[in-house]
Amino acid sequence: MRFCPNKLFTKARNLIGIGLASSAAVSAAGASSSTSSSADTSSTYTTTTTSDSPSSTSSFPVDSSTDDDQRRKLCIIGSGPAAHTAAIYAARAELRPVLFEGWMANGVAPGGQLTTTTDVENFPGFPDGVSGSDLMDRCRRQSLRFGAEIITETVSKVDFSKRPFRIFTDSRTVLADAVIVATGAVARRLSFDGAGDGPGGFWNRGISACAVCDGAAPIFRNRPLAVIGGGDSAMEEANFLTKFGSKVYIIHRRDNFRASKIMQGRVLKNPKIEVLWNSEVVGAYGDEKSGGRVLGGIKVKNVVNDDVFDLKVNGLFFAIGHEPATKFLNGQLELDPDGYIVTKPGTTMTSVKGVFVAGDVQDKKYRQAVTAAGTGCMAALDAEHYLQEIGTHEDTSS
Image (cartoon, rainbow, N blue to C red; front, side, top):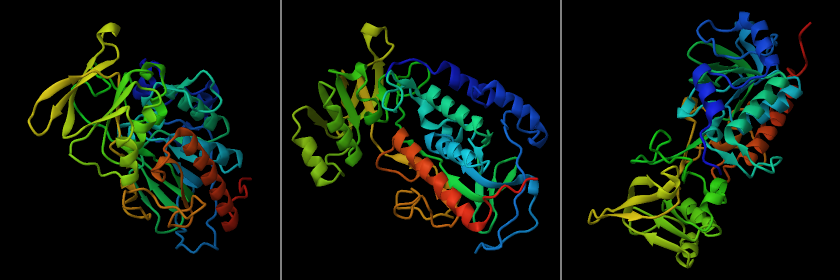
C-alpha cells in the first residue's frame, strides 16, 4: 500500500455528502428533486419510484395506510462493497432499490472501511491496485448507472414487526417490502499518541487493522512488524505477517493468550515471532529516513513495572476485534454472542422473513472486500426471489 491521503473522495464526501457522481447522476438528481427532503440537500436521487401494492400473501400484518411516495420494493442499508453489489444486482433486476449510504455512520464516510485505506491490491480486476476510495466511488457510480437511488442519510432505526418494513432516518421514513442490511463492522482501534489519521498520526502510514489486507505491501517487506492482541485473530495475523516481515512482535497486555491452544502453539513455535507479555503500546513515531512520513517505531510500556521502551517497527497491526454495526436494529434480528447477524445456512436470510444481510455485519471470519461483494450478490438474488414469491416483482407502473 502506498501511503497517501485520500484527497478527492474523502474530502469531497465530507464536504458535500455525495461521491464523485457522474454528470448523468447529477442530472437525474435534479429531475427528482421534488421528492427530496428540504433538510437534506446532499442526497443523490437517480430514479423516480412508483408505488407497489402490499401483498395479500404475506404472513406479516399489513398497514394499508402507507404513503405511496415513500414505498419501495427493496431498501439496502449500507455503503460498502456488499451494499453496492446488492444495489447493482437489484437495479439490473428492475427492483429499483433505494440505498441509504449513511452520513459518517459509525464514524466512517459513505463507502465504508475501504474509504480509510490507501491501496487495495487484492481486489480482482485491478492488477496495479486501486485506492480504497476510488474503488468505492466506482462501485457507487455503477449503482447509480443501473438506477439505484442513493440517499446520503444514516438509518437510525427500523421496524421489522409488520409489512411493509419501515426504515427511519432523522428526516424521513421509507417503507419497503424487502430489506438488505449491509452495514458492516468497524475494526476496533486503540487511541494513543500517533495512532490517529490526523496530523502526527500514522494510521494508513504504517498502522493498520487488517494484516491480510495490507501486510503484503512493499513498505512492510523484510521489516520488523508488530501485532496487538491475544485472540485467534492476533495469532492468525502474526503468522501471516511472518511471510513478509523480518520479525513479528505480538504485544499483549496479559501474561497469557485467550486464543485457542492450537493457534497459540503455531505462534509460540514460529521462530520469527516474539511475544511481549504484559505490555501495551503508548505511542508511535515516524521514521527519520522518510522525514517522519511513515511509521518508524512505537513506545511500549510494561504494565507490571511501568517501564517504557522504544521498539523499532515499520508496521503495527491492531487485532483486537471488530464491532458489527447492529445497534440500530434494536434487537429485531437474531444476533450471535458477538453481535453479528445470524443467517440461515447457505443463504443470506435472517430471522425475519424478507430481511436479508450481506457483508461484514454477518461475517466475522473473512472480512474481505471481495467476500462482502459476494454476499451482496447473494442477498440481492435472495431478495429478488422473495419479492417474486410475494408478488411484488412485477412493475406496476403505467
